[in-house]
Length: 304
Image (tube, rainbow, N blue to C red; front, side, top):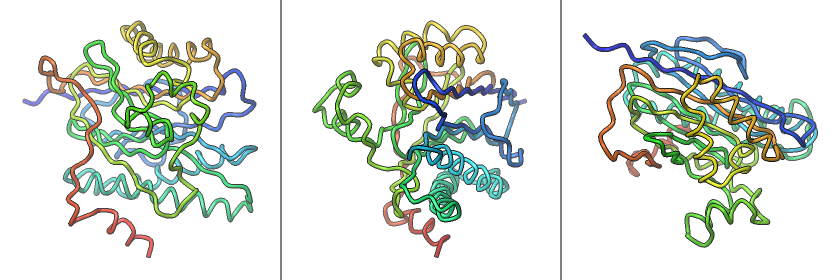
């Protein structure tokens, strides 16, 4: 008999120490759960759940626009996932990637519609890092500079790519991750929902192993630490409850300055998942779409 697969999820968002309002939000959802509220409290334990979806969004635009943008993003994605949960429950990997990618385009349209509805004249946008777990594989979508990490064997490794000016320079080898933290253009992102019609969604995946901890976060967390310091803090706080783990990361980011809103969602992969092979290192893995069968073409057909 197959062993029961168990995952735990916990999230927390905090205004930080400088900002007057919180433009971050997060989502925890399953394909058997209809339209949950954003920013839920408590730890959720799922056993043999068909699909578990988590996401973090960081809004921008000033005044209330940033908060509206991030909430609109996650409400739209939540509703899209709910409307397609039967498809997700039965979908093959390629179809899963197409559905979660389509949810991002849906959210992008929703922000434009919300701006028209509220007559918001100034530009507003939002980042997005989302992750959908099914059959021991995590499917990720990325827009902007929020992040996903995997903590495995004592090492914290980034599993998304920053769509930011400094992120591009780091990939080119022009600057280091540490230099990026103090770069004068560190806040310039290359893509955001609600700012352009045709987004290039970065879709990736990661096979998960027993004991992995997935961390989704806004830049309010990682911008306070060098990569080595963040890894040290994750390593030092990973042995308690998932709730304490998430709270500790948020608290330490505030203690380090808390210059931005801080959001962390943790997913602990427990029983029933494959045992990792020695030396198996997680990292960024682009989803292998075939160019001749580009899902963006089919996604765009939804809106025309």
